[in-house]
Amino acid sequence: MDVAGFWAMIERSAQETDTRAERVAWLEERLSALPVAEIVDYQTWWTIAANRGCSWDMYAVYWTLMGSGSSDGFEYFVSWLISLGREAFETVADCPDAAVDLPQVQHVLELERSFFRGYRRVTWSKDGKFRLTRLTRRRREIWTREEWPEFELLEYVTFEPYKKATGLETDSLGDAVRARGVKSKFPSLTYHAEPDGAEWDFGDEAEFIRRLPRVARHAGVTQ
Image (tube, rainbow, N blue to C red):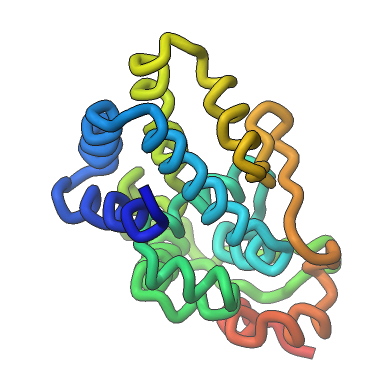
């Protein structure tokens, strides 16, 4: 399986299903019909894609959209970005600031505005978190799991197919990927990501505006 085949499978899984659970099951079924080498191919391309999304600037985008963040949540956010397909993912992987222009992210932002109806972001604190001034307790709607911008289970679709095909535990799948010279920047056991680039303070307004001007405008970050 080459990179085009990997993305074709990701995108077709979205076209052929209506829910995330169905999508995961669809991928597991298709992967189970493949030779072991192609299952490893898929996992290798997944890891390469996820690594492209693992940067400090992308972490800042995730932190801003969610209002806070964690290393494992960031990993699942990158998985969600991969689920959007090759064109969308590669656009934001090359330019995290472009994430706010994706229709899917715009939908998340609209849900956020609906969920926090009666709330207003008023400051960007030095600890990198938003402070919200509450005007009313009413909320118009609750987000569903289908809309949440994290997709953890999409990461695991190779596990059962690989175990069935080899009789081995999934640790050996990671070994097979590393044997190809690809190491994940999202260690699954430690939950400590290793993002690309130098770590920076998300509360540094000048740096935030310099790195992510469109995200900064959305967040109301000004000097």
